[in-house]
Length: 163
Image 1: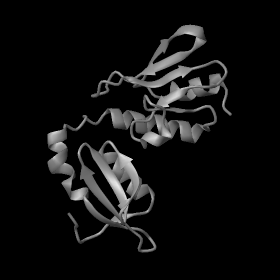
Image 2: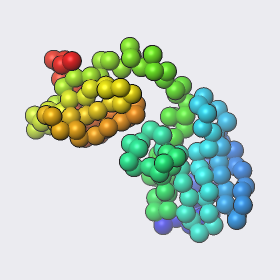
Image 3: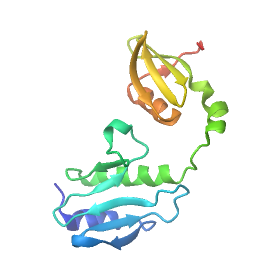
């Protein structure tokens, strides 16, 4: 586990982040260039080495309810990558639902795995659901999360589209 000082040193290599000291010796780092409401990238970095990084780009089940992930046991490379991905995510404008309908409709349909497994991605109400046959596998609040999940799991979109 990296120490508080080591994590602080790593985080400070990102000139885009602004340090904000908070209570109990903890430190937050804000990303003022964020185009989204969220500005905090690192939250409550504690002298004991614990802390959190905003991970809106990750699946909801991998983060806490506010979208943060615990970095207590992260090594240098993993911490740098997580912070960079967080800033990249916060640099993308939030997609309005109406725009989503047009832009992400292409994601709906059959996705094929490495061993020819089939999953189906369907938008239902405000959610993006992944089905294996008639069984619900995963549920996402955004098409970006659904697509990342499918790609991370080794699935590629089938050329034939089901609707």
